[in-house]
Structure formats: C-alpha cells, structure tokens
Image 1: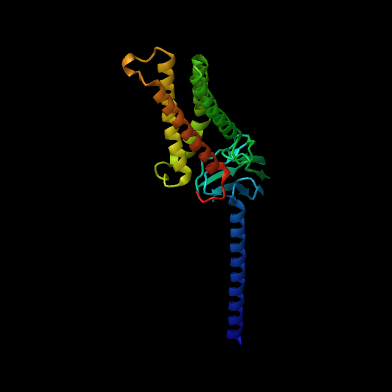
Image 2 (image 1 turned 120 degrees about the vertical axis):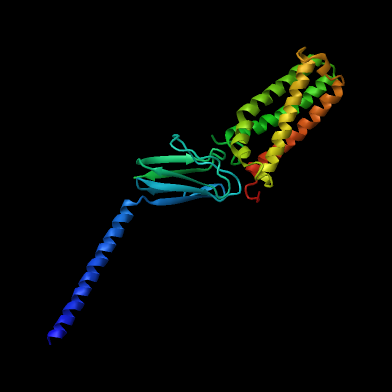
Length: 119
Length: 153
C-alpha cells in the first residue's frame, strides 16, 4: 500500500513539474515574441506596393521586395528613408522607431505610392 | 511628381519626351532654314536645340542613367531594359558632342584650323540623321521603361 502511494505521489509530482515547466516555457517564448520587433514585408509587383497601406507597431522592420522586371525605388515623402534602385528581387529594409504616418513613393514611377502607419 | 502622359513615368521624364520630339522637329525646321539660305536663323535654331538638349541631359537623362542603369552594367546588359538605355545613352552622348563640335566650328573661331572640317553640308546632314536615330531610340527607351510594363524585359 505504501509503495502504491509513493508511486502515485511520484507520478503526481512529475505531472506538476511538467505542467510548471510547460507554463514557464510558454511564458518565456511569449515574452520573447513581445520583445522581438516584428518584421513585415511589402511586395512590389506590377507597378504597385502590396499592401498599399499597413499599420505596424514601433520598432517594426519593414522590408520591400521588388518582384517586377524593372527597377523601382522606395522613397519617403518626408525624406526619412530612401532606397537605391531595386532591381528584380532586390530588397530594402527600414525599421520604424517613431510613431506616425509615413507616406512613400517610387521616384522612378511616382504613380506608385504607399503608406506605413506606426502606432 | 507624377507625369502627364498617362504612363507611370514622372513629370521630368514626360517633359523630356515632349521636348525631345519638339527638338527633333525644330532641327528639321532648322535644316529647311539653311536650304532657304537663312543662315543666321539656321544657326540660332540649331544652337538653341543643342544647348537645350545639353540641359535636358544634365538635369534629366544623366541622373536617371546614373541611378538606374550605370550600377547594373555591364552585368545586366543582356536585359532589354538596360541594353536599349545604354545604346541610347552612348549614341546620344556622341551625337550631342559631335553637334557641339559642329556648333563650335560653324559658329565660332574657337577650334584651330587643322581641326575644322570642310564638308559642312555632309557632316551636318550626318548629324541630323544620327540625331533622329537617337530620338527614335529615346522614344523606344521611354516606352520600354514606362509604356509597356507588362512585357518581360
């Protein structure tokens, strides 16, 4: 009987340890994800930015990828950021550390415009 | 600044295209002035076109070439987008320089005697013909860059 109780106790202890460890791990990764700045991609396709407008949190790194067969640029209207000419599959990234609305366009094809809202 | 010709091109590219076509026509008119022996008007017309083209090269075409084409050549010359622009740029630069040389020979005493050509009509006609070839290649470049985005370039 004593051995049976011990086995039950050990099993319960193992379950408790497993549960606590799973909770700690889940909390750890959740916190890590919160602290890690998010990364967002905007594609350039068929002479347009997609999505045309996005809302991100502060510290987010936004990457533009040109999938067109002609070069494009990414230029902020208030001169906060400016890429070189991006050829096919070239990328440009910018990390938004301040909140606000950032309008941008392609200087080669000014009809192409987009907006990043940082909260 | 957005263009006004209904393509994705910017304002400066559209202005440049319109001015280049106008300049090509002005050169033909200038040639007719020489035929009718109005040489002063001919000289003024040709000089104005050459200098205006020089301004457009400095303000519009060279910056665009420098930003979009120069970093990619010779590596990507096999692509139409770069090949046509490079050909147009090289031929256009040579034509502008030759035009300026003709202007200096015909309109000034700045060029030493031994560097002056004598067959005026021949070289001026050659310049006019090449100018139009460059103009047509420029129109082709514009439509390749801005007018036909759906084509695989």
